Length: 118
Image (tube, rainbow, N blue to C red; front, side, top):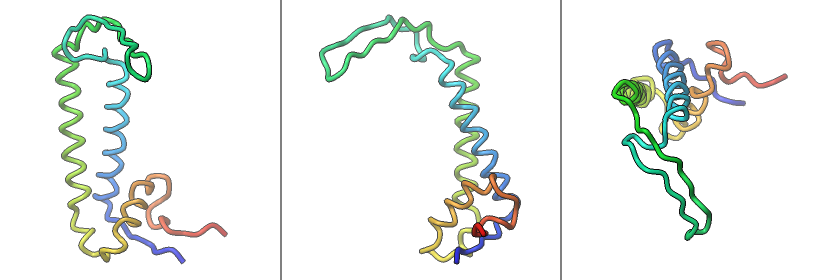
């Protein structure tokens, strides 16, 4: 029988926002040019696979600020979630399982994290 964890609402909310911020950052980084600074393109086929990059115009100041804002918020949330007082209530040997369940808690309603399928 799996252990049930009653995650506090602020911890669940912090984890959910962390998921959202990471997703937003990922989308933004995929959209931006490959280099922060303007650089010429290059092609290198001397390694085990060929690497090519087009010229990069670099990131604008607004793009850099947006990435920095999201990275700062991601860090704040990661510190909040990992350092939450709830973890002191969980036995050390069970914390990894509990942390994994929290990461997926957004997919299940509160209080149903550990229900086994019938």
